[in-house]
Amino acid sequence: MVSEMNLRKLALVALVMLVAMSAKAQQQVTFTQYMFNPMAINPGYIGSQGTMNISALGRWQWTGIEGAPRTQTLAMHTGVPDKNIGLGLQITHDEIAVTSQTSVFLGYSYMIPVGPGELRMGIQGGYQRFNSDLADLFVIGADPSFSESISASRPNFGFGLFYSTDRYYGGLSAPLLLNTTVESGGQAIITQRRHYFLTGGYLFDLSENVKIKPNLLIKAVDGAPVSVDYNVNVLLKELLWLGVSYRPPESINFLVEFNINDNLSIGYAYDYIIDATLSDATTSSHELLVSYRFNLFKGKEEMALLSSRRYF
Image 1 (cartoon, one colour):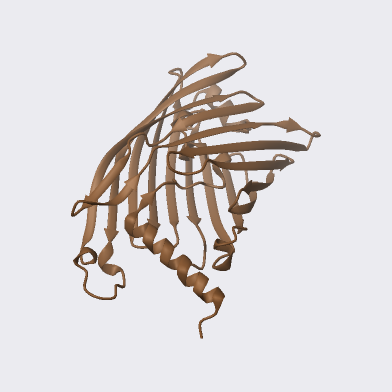
Image 2 (cartoon, rainbow, N blue to C red):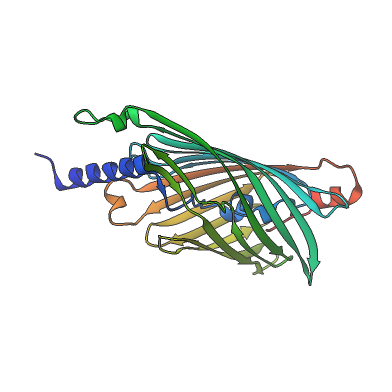
């Protein structure tokens, strides 16, 4: 006899599969380590560190559930000396059950000094490739709707504003401005809605070797509740970040990032699921981030930027 818990697990798997089939992409991926990889949600961040940065991130959401979301990103961006501009490239692959999308975006930012800091205005544009292999689903009975694989490409673009000083930062962005719909037989199979992100953070010195940085992420999209991520990170001896986040009602998240040297850092995030429905089928999500920065230019000013610490 099937237990109540197993029934809940089956129902949750069915829900994930249903989301994949209709692909109502009401929510873009929320990265737990957004404060260490801001370009993932804001093209205004492009070039803000002066040096060239390369970041690779993998996210495994709701582990233990078949067909749960998985995401990989590769981001590269650099400032251009004496030009006040930044250039970037971002490649993302996202999967949920039998549905996947791959996107490639080029980005550009322009910096103007404002008060004690700098304001960067960024744009990005590119293409998204959507695939839905409905034929891979197990369906009871004959249904021609599930006998085909659907593929489509769509252009999209986004914008972002990013302001930062030595002590605080703030950002507003909409990385995908165009609402996207892919249809089959007159029915919407994939729907992607515009998302808005508002971020901010402040750095406090507790002592010579201890700094604390609270961060906030607010995400809004039409047709879904506003999502808020509350975070506090502590930096120890300029080497180790330790943090905790609360993302109601889904999870409590734990973060660690190690600055191996001035160039290389490795970060990991563990999301502990507290949502009553999800926690019956899974207890965690995982995220791994590797970042490397180096100087393409040989000027003294750029080399100084490379050796200095950036907190945002």
